[in-house]
Length: 479
Image (cartoon, rainbow, N blue to C red; front, side, top):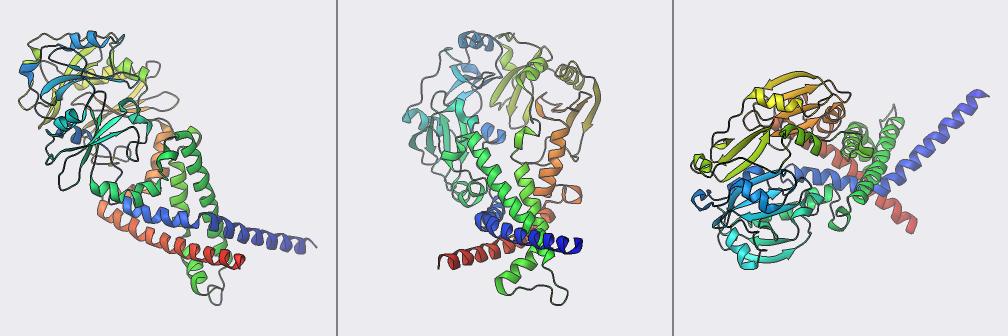
């Protein structure tokens, strides 16, 4: 009696498993296929972004002889009640300017010659600014844009609207300049704009009207990828249930391909789907990657909008300097010069690892600094995410409940990142599973790329065969 009940229950479970996988697969099969295909494109072409190297490379050398306004005077003219998140002196076309980023993200630009706010960009101004870019050839203004496919995220909000300028170079480069300040916000190339449609835009469901509403976009991606994950898990289980002893699979044609590829590559599909789902940080499970405003203020050790600098101090900047950053670290004023040789303290500023560590302690005053490590080579938690990591780097590990670590640049004092236990778990749940960036593969990019391509090809077979079967099922039902 109990045996018959158990067999009936197992039969019903298999039936529901089969139906669930069929209809979940029909609902998400094409999207899973697109995810695997677009992921391969993303391996070759990343989403457009402005790197620090690109930003500095677009700047001409500073004409320090033209500077008449000190950083202190610029702060006073800006009317800030506290020290800004960033104060930079760099060229704006043919004249130097102070670029000010407040702690809330708002931007200002003041002439370093007169101290007056810079005027809003006109088309002629934008082309003149773009003409000094090293790649500029036949510069042309393309008009204004508030939000488009490449500037959709909220981090661009303080810089909107933009004037878009084409450089006329062979790469088809276009610059996005903040209309209010002239600050370079983004550069894109023709290849990036073309390949990101079948790449990142498809992979991340990055359609502008949806992505502009960050909360809605996150919910959509979580739900859609969650349903796809349920389809993958049910299919993986069902694949083993359907294995036969005599001839391995009871299916023929596309169904046999789907069954056998699903058994062989189902774990790949499930792993990629679950790690992709976790990358959306559902319910804020994983901690932030950067310090908050209070931590930055504590690290600076100086909140007042002042910067003591004599009028002749700028003359100590190295030849070829393209930007000077004025910062506070541990209550000490520091001037950082960026140029062809990299970024380093100048003009009498000095930084030591001891001073940086002392400033770092202030970020978590209630916790004990458990360990300070100087990394000379990458490790499991300081590694290539989107380019070679800065080295050497100082790691400050605290004994707070979250197990917080900070990574600091010993050369410039810059805070490079923050991570806690949840962030370190995410390193394995996303990077290790989704990009295979772990273990012996971490330091072997060519081998890792080859393995990702191979596994993605297996996933494509599963997704393609499932999509064909789903389409045939729908056609039969309509008929």
